[in-house]
Length: 392
Image (cartoon, rainbow, N blue to C red; front, top):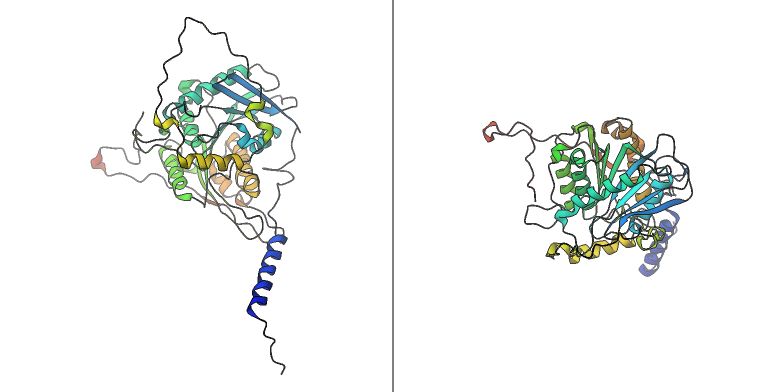
């Protein structure tokens, strides 16, 4: 019997690395679907970009450069992360939504170093209300106020929830869907930095609420998502869904479900390139309100790093399949009056397709959140009632 050929360790190591590199190069992640939810079969190829309001209080509006359908366009209100105030950071997703037929509103509710988190929800509500009023008679924008969805990213998620909770009293249309990507920025109490949650028990019971977090830096987003779902106690459990996007390094480039991953830069949506409406004439006798600076107006070091990651984010399979596709399917279900169970039971909803070598990309995790636990009768609180959050 011929003896086995023994190669030096250096040669074996080199061959192993080459084989690994070759496998990674051969396996590429799935591209954007050609059609269907998250897909590229767009109704239009160009997007109208407008700014409504004034500098310091502006809402950007985006919609397909094509005639609006007879029933109008569904409205998607996109609420940015704290510090990521230009639609450029989310331009890829915004373009997908607009080309697919939606009217996308991007209220810039924050002036960095001038806006307090405690005021952000009120500012966002006012901006959206004014923008919808300004577009009400626009035949090209043509908002359909019976089909409204909210998308939030990081601190934009609690702001979306607050807008939904106060929709009726602020004169905003009641949203059919709240889609929260990587929830964060929630204040722990009245003395903490962040967005204070309002009474989320007031969110309409027929609202569909979907939160999605990633498996990188996941603990804070996990806690925030579960808190939002728990405190929206007026919405039944079968209308709530908790999703988890999973990183996958089977091929190259790897998919990394970070806090910044829902962003996708597109320079065509740079706020500086969108013409602002002219400023109204100022009354020389009217003095501007006094400005008082507070520490929570400034970004922390961690926030600055995260904003840089958001602004530099590209698009990959996580965008197409974990965020864009799931939102498209959730919006269709919400507008049709379906609950979250229909999404969870649809295998396409959590499918992430396959790498180019046929290996499946890790599926999304999906779970229905548990209803609030019953409290002892001695507390004097009704069983299952959510504790009212503190207000600022």
